[in-house]
Length: 198
Image (cartoon, helix red, strand yellow):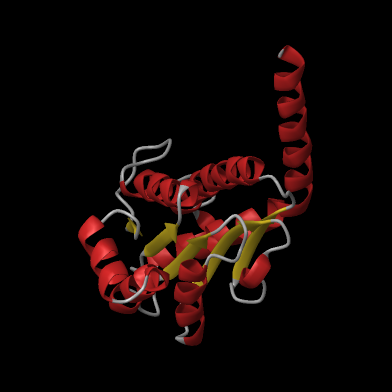
């Protein structure tokens, strides 16, 4: 059983090493886009299914509350939490519209729509991202495998090079934590001159 656990750790390390080599600049670009959004009085709208729904709520909480430093609350909304909205849309229309209708109601051109799907093919995520993309609203995507339908749909797309859903989810939350820390530092810390220079 110890070797089983060791194999999981080795797989995690391999995934992390590949992820780190490919995505450092992308993480910086995502953080800068989010910081710019907040500075322009925009907000984040984040969503996904299952574990990705939990990630959306986790990320929103880090921005609304705080991450590592004391700073003002930052506007981020997880579109996965209102059971009345989710069930009414699913019941009256279709589950594939649960995020689309919320994005239609809440998003404007100052905002960022952030979809999370480990496969890149979740229709309810794709529908919301497609609406944002066609209405000049910036989009961020977190996915895995080959990117699926999210390829070409997001302004900034982070793809974890793995077919293992657990490894993809682990990299997603690690990436989100890095982004949260970068945003804090860009807006309120050691990199705040990046905003002043623009």
